[in-house]
Amino acid sequence: MSKDHLFSSYDQLSSTWDEMYSSNSEIREQYDMIIDYLKNTSKKTLSKKEELSKQLFMSQGVTFTVYSDNEGIEKIFPFDIVPRIITAAEWDKIERGIKQRIKALNLFIKDIYNEQFIIKDGIVPADLIYSCPNYLREMKGVKVPHNVYVHIAGVDLIRNNDGEFYVLEDNLRTPSGVSYMLENREISKRLYPGILPRNNVRSVSNYPNLLYKKLQELSYNSNPNIVLLTPGIYNSAYYEHTTLARLMGIELVEGSDLVVKNHFVYMKTTNGLKQVDVIYRRVDDDFLDPLEFNAKSVLGVAGIMAAYRKGNVNIINAPGTGVADDKATYVYVPDMIKYYLGEEPILKNIKTYQLGRPDELQYVVDNIRTMVIKKTDGSGGYGMLMGHEATDEEIKDYLDNLRKKPENFIAQPILKLSTAPCYINGQLSPRCIDLRPFALSGKDGIDICPGGLTRVALKKGSLVVNSSQGGGSKDTWVIQ
Image (cartoon, rainbow, N blue to C red):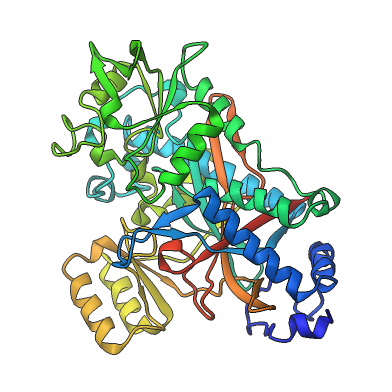
C-alpha cells in the first residue's frame, strides 16, 4: 500500500500536538517501526485485523454499560488497532510525577481524617472538606494498616499543545479500566506478532501479580484470604471484576456472600465460614455498610466498618478516599505536594476555576464558549457542559441549575488534547486521546504499570474520550 493512500485523510489539527507527527510533519522516531509495518500491509489485511480485534473482544465478553442508553445495557468496547507509543524519557517523567502525586494525596487523606494540619495551616479551607460528599466522618481517627489509604489509583493525563502532560483528574475510589489495558495488550500480541519484542515494548501483563502482591502486603497475616467484592453483574465494570479475580486467583464475592461475626468478616463456603483478611472492594462507600451509610444497600456487608475500625479486615481502597479525588479538591493538589513533600509538582494541574467564588464564576460565564464545566462529584463524562458545542439555550439551562449551588461546580479551559493515528475506514486519521496509568501502593512503596489505558474520542473532532460517551481505546506501548 502506498504511503499516500494510508495517510491521505490524515489532517493534522492546527495548534494540536500530534503523537505521530512532529510539528514539521516528520514521523516521530518511536512510530517508525509500526508505521513502516502499516505501510507495507494491505488495506485488506489491516481491515481483517480490525475485524479480528472485534471478534476477540466479543468472545472475551469485554463490555461496558451505558446507563443512559435505552437500547440495551452491554456494549462492546471499541478498540483501535494502531497503538499509542510513549518513549522511555516521557514515561520516566510520568512515573515520577504520579508517584509524587499519590504520595502527597495519601498524606492528605491521612491528615484530613486525623490531625488536620493542612486545614489549621490555612492551605485547604475547612468548608471545602466538610461540604465534600465523599468526606466520611466515620473514618475520623481510624488507624489504617501501614498508613496506606490509596492502594490503587488511576490518574488521568492529557498532553496539551505544548507537548507537556497535565493531570486531568485523580481516580482514587474504585478506579476502573485496567482490564481493558490488559486485554488491549493481549490483542496487540495477536495482531502484531514479533513487533512488540522488536520494539522493546515494556510489559503490562504483570499487573495482576503485582496487585496480588500489594494486597498481600496490606495484611498482617502471612497468608491472607483476599476477596474481590463486586456490586454484581449489572455494574458497568463487572467484566473487569471477574477478570481481575480470575487473574489473581482470588474469590469474586457479592455482599450476600459475606457476613460479619464478632467484628470479623467471613465468607460463606460449602465447608462453612472462612475468615476474610483483605477486601478489594469495587462497591462505592455509600453502599459498603448499611448500618453506617445507605440503610437500603444490599450491595455491601452489615458491620464491615466496625470490623475495619478494629483492624480485623483491610478494605482496599480505604473508605473516604473520595475526599481527595473530588474535583474541588483537585485545585489544591499542587499545594499539597509543596506542603507535605516540600517539592514542586512534576506534573502540572490544568487551570481550574471554583465556581463558588463569585469572581471566578463571573469570569467563566463571560468566557463560557472556551470553557468546560463539570460537577465536582461527577464522573464518566456525565453532567458536563462543553461551552464550544452547547446551544445558547443549553448554556442558559445549565447556568440556571449551576447558580443554585455554584460550589458544586468547577470549570476549566477547553484544552487541545493531543491526537494519535487511528485506523478508520481503511485510512489513518487523527483522533483526540488521553491516558490513564495505574498506580499500586503497598507498605513497600508505589509501583506504576508501564503503559495504562489510552482512551480515544472516536467521533471526529470530539474531545470526550469516555466509553459511555462514544469513546474507545487503544494499546499503550512504552518503549525502552
